[in-house]
Length: 159
Figure (tube, rainbow, N blue to C red):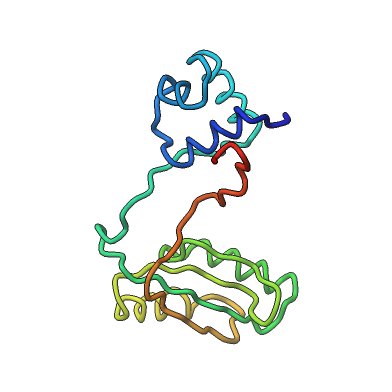
């Protein structure tokens, strides 16, 4: 399915308010509610929309510390990568994990209540991961940008 300007406008609106009704969305993008519903369903069916989720204020849950953890494995063999990846998905404090190029094999985003909580996470989750040679952690001081989708995706539709 090729996306047109209306599809991009629907996606742009949904990234800022996924709970918008078909009527609200239709008004904002210049379609009837029926046409909007049909297009939104097509975007879901074609995989452009994978899920709808709530953006939570994690500070309300006491998670005020974001830690970027760089991991280097003792080997980059397929077995080492698979073993690490199979275990890191089980770590409840890890919210994102990226396989990297460069000097670090993985970067993890970890959420913690504070530094003491991160020490517990390091001891009970991260230090138990297989084949790890080095762990380096950096604490985020303040979040500046947090976008689910870069606005360039929507081109002219967002402007």
